[in-house]
Image (cartoon, rainbow, N blue to C red; front, side):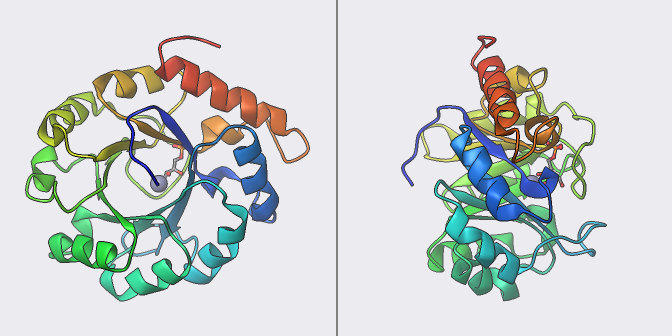
Length: 229
Ligand code: DX5
Ligand code: ZN
């Protein structure tokens, strides 16, 4: 995984057909997805349940790009090795998930993955001020985590603060929640480079009509780049 700040679209498979993940992942990658975003929820840190490490390991052979695993679980540390074994490229933990995010980020890197840190909408940018050299990605939540399809919460001032705090460090800013062709330009202009999108990518398409995914991805990318497709 090399670092650059070009716009990357990371479809969240939370909006895919849950009976057909292999084909859904292949379809979004064939249609231009840069990363594949996997939302892990525990019914405790967030009020919903999704994938354990065995499911994520089963997704791995289908992902040819970057497997971006977003942990919405607490605690995190007991599961780091399991998600490394499942083949995560990026493993992101929430700063709100426990008292020792510094240790968690060290452990994620020690397990051979890129370390991400996520911030809920109510958490300020300053929460990661002392973590900038321990992280490869900061995920700014633009919804309260737990469900796809929620309304975008404007976090552009937080994104700008983070962009300035990061400076020249090779740290991605990822936006997660309510990203579509209307909101993508706001977050891209503020300094984000990885745009997670669930409903806006999968809407209207299926593995039988994957070109719809392609059109949805192109529309988000074009909007973020300031040029409509
Ligand atoms: C929310 C998840 C998101 C979500 C995004 O808890 O972390 O990744 O699936 O879905 P949309 O794009 O539909 O808001
Ligand atoms: Zn997510």
